[in-house]
Length: 294
Ligand SMILES: NC(=O)c1ccc[n+]([C@@H]2O[C@H](COP(=O)([O-])OP(=O)(O)OC[C@H]3O[C@@H](n4cnc5c(N)ncnc54)[C@H](OP(=O)(O)O)[C@@H]3O)[C@@H](O)[C@H]2O)c1
Image 1 (cartoon, rainbow, N blue to C red):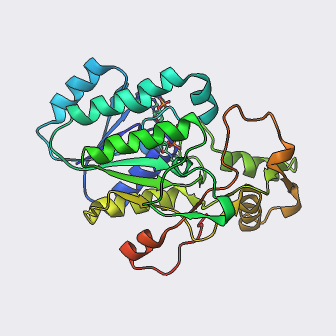
Image 2 (image 1 turned 90 degrees about the horizontal axis):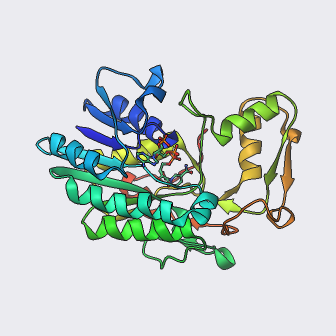
């Protein structure tokens, strides 16, 4: 059985689809408000449960209820908008650190526990540095620092971490659109979009991110930390061009802008570029190339 915590989000919805497709397992999917779960995420193999991971009484009784069953857990619930984390660090700490730690210690009978972390733990790719899993972490904002600490909690407990770059893809949720959907809308309506051309990330799609984590779980991989990223770091501008080309839309509506000319739009500091090494991932899956697939 899979247990997905924070399941009704961008990545969670793709992970659910991937589990349904690649395995015969049932899923207990948890989110704060099950009334927001769309029909496309309902299936006879999925049991949706309301669970706020900051409500320790509810978490305890949920864990007791499922402690007899052997589970593969994917823990996605997070307070993760870097600007909001910077503004509300205590709220973020409670969700990202205290609640994670409480949940891990309450939930027994776990055959796999995966925590999706972020390239933000690495910080800036100075002089073209491409970060490997064993490199020191050097986050530039509170979100990255909390992710790095959350990783330590997870790996110290003996569980596993994957690090993702910026993820992109259409939203499978009826309740919210992703940045991808806003790009497509702006191109279709001919309004166009300004996109950063001088900040690079090893971007992959939500579908790739979900398929790799489910496959790692299914193959019982035991690496404590795995970077899940593409070979080539792309700017958001380049991602915009790829989307326009794929959908046959006017590429000139994707307009390059520089981060340095956009001062004041972010509250939290951002790494200008973060590039990830994916050699370990490619060796696990015995592939030569991983490209952004959207
Ligand atoms: N998207 C990316 O580019 C990216 C990159 C690297 C790592 N990640 C990590 O991947 C994970 C999922 O991100 P995402 O992109 O799928 O974001 P998302 O759509 O916002 O998903 C996060 C989910 O966490 C849930 N959540 C937040 N607080 C909760 C609480 N107190 N109790 C229960 N659930 C709670 C949210 O539920 P509500 O719907 O109720 O708010 C939401 O469904 C996060 O840990 C994020 O840091 C994402």
